[in-house]
Length: 214
Ligand code: O7E
Image (cartoon, rainbow, N blue to C red):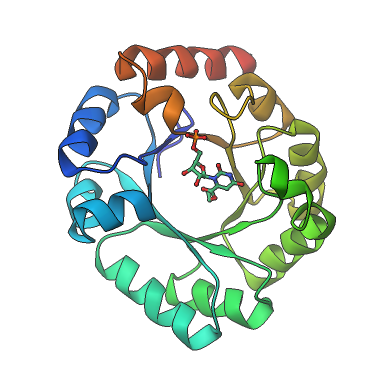
């Protein structure tokens, strides 16, 4: 995955035509595309293969099952051309390890979630989830741009593993705060795909990220 604009597009649109329109507009300003259930259910799994020809695709199925089922899901996602997958860690280390093995390490594990409800169950165990991700050999973790101080805390646990961070824009987080706190990439959905001008929205975010790295 390139590390240029440090923006991962969360492409939560619900038609293939919208997906193509947004990707065409922003392809030079994002480093990867995250595909979640809304688009997969609307456009079919082949959308992963199609998008993977344009950019690295992170399959965000938030996999959360027993090890064998996790393995089967990851194998299907990788066969479609995904570069990485996202799984939950609360299922335990055997389930996460099954994802890591099937994806040859290309796994991001969700820690503290970015929405208000993320404080309820994920926040109290986020440090343990980050440690679990590290022990399992994952590539990185997902940590909240809405609480940049938590990005910094979790960074201390995982060392130089990658942090991808959702919650910028529509959820109230700021790109610059997340990057300064230690995120490698921000994940941005609505602030780009709901914008009347997705290209300039992505350009503005990329400029903010660049400034925050100075
Ligand atoms: O708020 P938006 O529109 O910018 O979209 C954010 C995206 O990040 C969306 O796809 C949502 O499912 C995802 N996300 C969060 O918003 N918060 C989290 O804690 C975790 C995720 C997520 O994608 O986890 C894997 C990266």
